[in-house]
Image 1 (cartoon, rainbow, N blue to C red):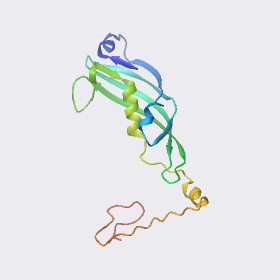
Image 2: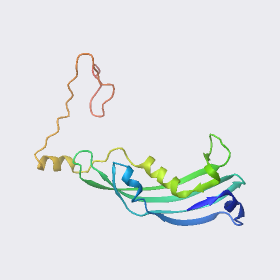
Image 3: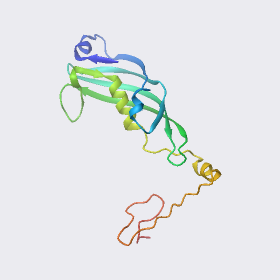
Length: 161
């Protein structure tokens, strides 16, 4: 769904409501860590701030299938989030820039999916699955004498208690 600035200026009644679905099956072919994506549902509205600036408030539900970082098995993951974003033809730090005179909801939603998807997901029972497969993870870290751990989620940094 796209709106040109001219189309937005012709809308008489704000907020202007929309409800749309997107199919990003083709788009995930370029994204290695998304195994599958179902239909993404978006509903929301557009408010006019001025002739060049618009506020989008919308709710997105994006069902993804990602890969478990440990077992490599598929993991169902749903991004469900509310957004309140301001778009403008005026280049300003407080707004997202409307490029090419068009507010493209398809691009906006796809960008948000890529931003919101986690880098890694792990199945809740990943360690049990690995154990059943005969795989034991060794999470001890051997360092050379000139290396140190700056941050670790389950251990204190080297030389600190």
